[in-house]
Length: 373
Image 1: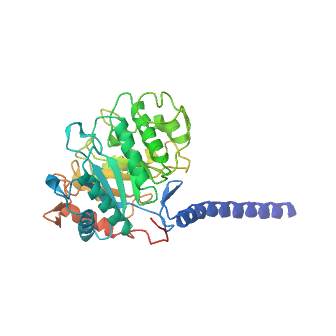
Image 2 (image 1 turned 120 degrees about the horizontal axis):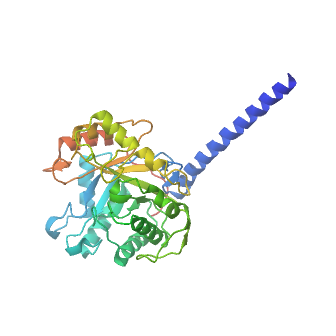
C-alpha cells in the first residue's frame, strides 16, 4: 500500500512538473514577444507584441490600388480610407505588381516608394501589419538577383519595425519544384542577412499545392540543401540553419470543385482536395509538414475569394470560430474584379460587408507596448 501511495505521489509530482514546464514554454514565448516588442512563433501559434495570440483579419490590396495613372494619394490617406471601411482590421497584404514589361518586382518609380513608405508608417502607427510580397508572377516563375536585392533593401529599411512582414514570390510554378524552395530559401536568407527577424510568409507551388511540401524540409529545418545557391540568385551555402519566424501562406480557391457544398469546402480547407495537377490546400496538411526552429509552422490564408463555390467558401472561411482552432485570413481584394471585389464607389460590397463582420468579430490590433521604431 505504501508503495502504491509513493507511486501515486511521484506520478502526481511528475505531472505537475510537466504542466509547469509546458506553461513556462508558452509563457516564455509570450514574454519574449512583450520584451522585444515583436511578433514570434510558438509551436503553431503567432504571438503578438502584447503577448496575445495574433489571428489575421484583413484584406489584400494592389500596390497601385490608391493611385491609378501614377497620380498617388498620400499613403497615410489610403490607410485612413481602409480603416474607415474596415475599422478593426489588423493586417493588409500589399501585393506589388508592376505594370512594366516582365513585371519585375519593385522596378518602380519614386512614386511607388514614397507611397509605400507613407503607407507603412501610417499602418504601423495603428499597429496594423503590412505584408509586403512580390506579386509579379501568378502561376509562373521568375528569379532574379534584382528580386533578392529588393527584399534586402526593404528588410534593411524595416528591420526595426515588427509590423512589416514579408511574403515570398506569389503563387510560383516551376519544374522542378525544387527551384521554388531554393527561391524561398534565398529570399529568407536575404531578409535575415540584414538582421531583420520579422515574420516571413512562405508560399508553396502555385500558392496551394501540397505535393511538394516535404521538399521544403531541409530548406526549413536546416542541413544540406542540394544545388543551393548554384541554381539561381541568392546567397548562402550548401548548409543552412533552421528557419525562425516563418508562416505558411496558403491560398484557398475551390477551382478543383466549383460546385462544392459547405461540407466539401470545409473538408478541402482542413484536409485538402485532389485535382488533376496534384493535391491542393489543407491546413492540417501544412501543419503536419516540416517543422521550423519554432515548432509547428502556423498557417494564414493569405488569399481567398468567391470565384468558385463562392457563397459556400465565404461561409466556411468567415466562421468566427473555425474548428478545431481559429485561422486568420486575408480576403482578395479591395479592387479586384467580380466576384472578388470588396469595395465599390468607396462603399463596401456585400462581400466586403461579410469580410468586415469577420474582422469586427476579432479583437482588433495588438495592444500598444513600449518600443521605438
